[in-house]
Image (cartoon, rainbow, N blue to C red; front, side, top):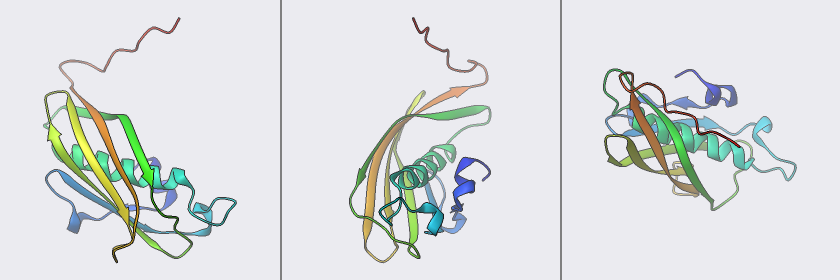
Length: 136
């Protein structure tokens, strides 16, 4: 799975991914830490967005594309260097143009670090890309 998320060192776990679910994992390194010595919130959001988006992608038909339209993350606990983080996304409902998804971020041993929910927009090649709103 190429893309921005790979630059932070987290990878798709195909054994724990499938129809409507996706798992992404990686080990916290020094580069992931903020000035307080704990994982930066942007890392949590990136891992969750990747896992949740992967769950949506697993349900797309040929010629369909998707993009995150909203992502709400609740930061429950801070993680430190050396911890393996496991992000899981699951599609709750997929409609014609919208998918509703929930996600969790934990260490695989029962410690939950964050939870999230979000919405993904879905479009097909026939419809073209979503239009841009005019900015005044």
